[in-house]
Length: 465
Image (cartoon, rainbow, N blue to C red; front, side, top):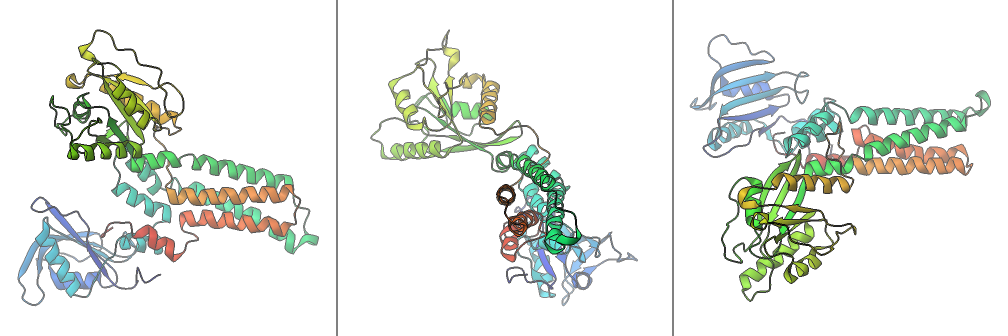
């Protein structure tokens, strides 16, 4: 292993999020050959409690020199190999908050443990065969899940629903490679290679890879979420729309133009998809320097958003200012929101404006101050998501960017093999790209992986996981 993750030592870390004066339980986790010995120097269990695997002991943590009580706690023992890392693992369950767990952590370090690096517990689980690489990545995705759908996709990965098909594809490629190499080495002793069968098998593998690759966009959507910017001229009800949608007063709402001076953000979940909603400053010509900066940030947010809600005042209709804003954001996917629709008997006529793909803009009528039209707005957003070939339905699996890159590499290599077969090149040529496809699939599960890849993956984990 690289210097980033030196092995062999017993490692320790705080394994729970610590909030000042708010945590009820704080966990300090040890893993390694000295974990139990360190625990025995610090933890005193009264009575005849047995120090056995998968038992919970009650007692107190004492300073080994002064014997001063540091905390009253529970101790969990998980002996190798029946533990998360397949090493001896000990957990101190202390009172929450900053001070107790920090004191216990310092005692563990003084007793000979080393502070764990980000992801080092899960890295050891991978290196010791407890998890494959897709399962390890799924753990990080589960911890960071921003919606129930993202959590379900992560759990599916943790259960091996990605690893199983990838391993199957790789095994079939290895079988094909073995058939080809056997003909190269023992051509005179074996019947001729069935090129049609090999081609059919490779095409089938390629199709299955394509099916898995089709989940990449959905996976990215579940993990990163959808960034939606609400833009429009002042006083069209953008802040009211944000407040009605998020069901809280995130933005200040007044009758004065230019109230919102900066981008206000709210995090929502729409049908399982995380949505980051940005309420932007009203866009208009102004001499106010502060408001001008807010307007510039609004346009930057709109240009960086996945979807723009161009909001107009239904009681005023489409104005020249609306047309000017539309021209600045028309390259982004758009939904036209006719807010304050409760103030007019009929909705105003909108000129024939088109979206980024040339199709007519979807239009949604809302009355934000009365919480009306929000469900229609969410339906329109989901329709926009689906029209971009990002399916909003639940998935059995959803690959991440690293996995997608390796699948693309495998698919490209198999297509090169098929081209080599079509060109009637020698069998030796077939094996070159087939080996690369096998290597790419192996990198997904970790059967073939470099130290730099492991460093990159596990350094993104939180400390203690």
